[in-house]
Length: 218
Image (tube, rainbow, N blue to C red; front, side, top):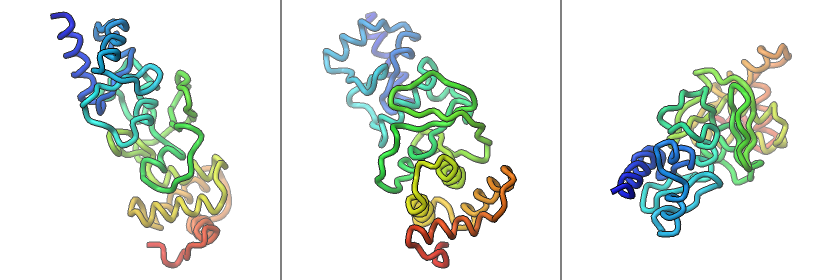
């Protein structure tokens, strides 16, 4: 009977997290680590990441490793109980991947949190504020909106100008944003940091560096 109760608790957690459960969530619901090991050995669960298991046969997230890393930002709290954006949002190159743009691998997973968070293996955690207007939900994950994503990448300096231009072009072609949206986000960043110039000219320069015609960007 106790074994069935343990499994039912895991199913409850996995149902709202695309089949994933952190070890901390499981133990918090009274499922001992030894029982998790037994279920892995029995083929009911499978390792998804260090500290995360997946209920086999359940739903599969399109980016399971990214979801697992996000869960580990606050490993004891179920996904549905985390306030957004305070609980951390997918950002930078991971946001680009979530939007399905480009094939350049990023430096592991990237997230932005309002205050320092516990370290997560193979993840870069940026500490910065994310306004309510700067994020959205995609595939069950909070992610920075296209304009904020482009600003983060431009300021972070991890991408070349032509790579930034390809990201901007991909966001526009994928209809995640238009030229006006991205220009406005870049313009807000310039004003907030006291820099000269305007967002539209900056965006046009990025598109041109990538060999894209700014005039054709919708």
